[in-house]
Length: 146
Image (cartoon, rainbow, N blue to C red):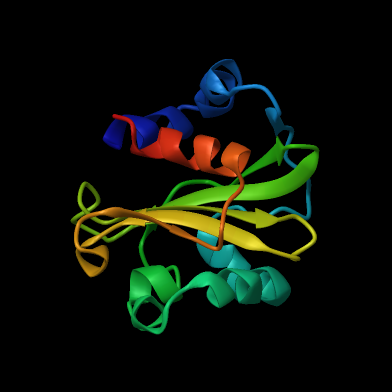
């Protein structure tokens, strides 16, 4: 996961992601209305943040890095999955990213969200939240392959 953060910091994340994505998935240029980091959803995009909160079980909502995005986050990217535009992001528990990681997709119109997480709170297992489609699942699963 540290490599993933480094890719974003040095600005090659979009290029690499574009090369690795499968059919039906693409990365788009950023738009001015896009959140920069996951916590921007909570602070500036309440409809999108609420879509995300709807998929979280109560126990995860109370965990700060899950429920409030109070963690270490990667820059949000705009992606297209099956012709639908999403904001794609990831966040982890500070000082313990390897075992506590979440990746999410929120529809650009705020209508829905899906996520995959692996954390102490999920018993160390990767769990799906929000019923992702096959294409959404494939995109998010790539974040756990390191």
